[in-house]
Length: 89
Image 1 (cartoon, rainbow, N blue to C red):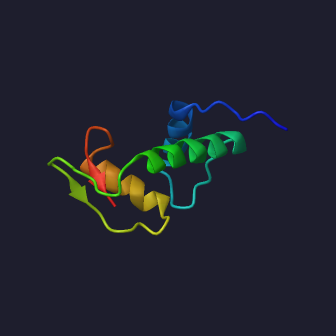
Image 2: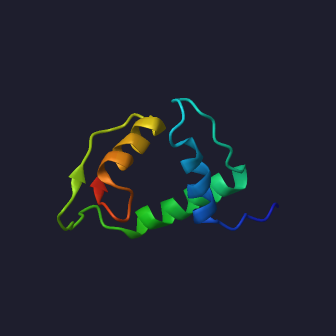
């Protein structure tokens, strides 16, 4: 059995931000092992949290971006990148 790759969140974020300022559809290469590790870590966080969220203002409420990464980057560029700005989608 192949050993799970150790997650490097900062590296994944840096890779994803390479699409900033580019035309929509710009491909970003993230290693498969990093994507799997990120999904596993996100799953653990979601399972550990209650379905009821107690949030503090200020908070930006956004609709579904339908997987449009370029639109998500535009929202963050306009309203500020996390963790400096808080969002709920």
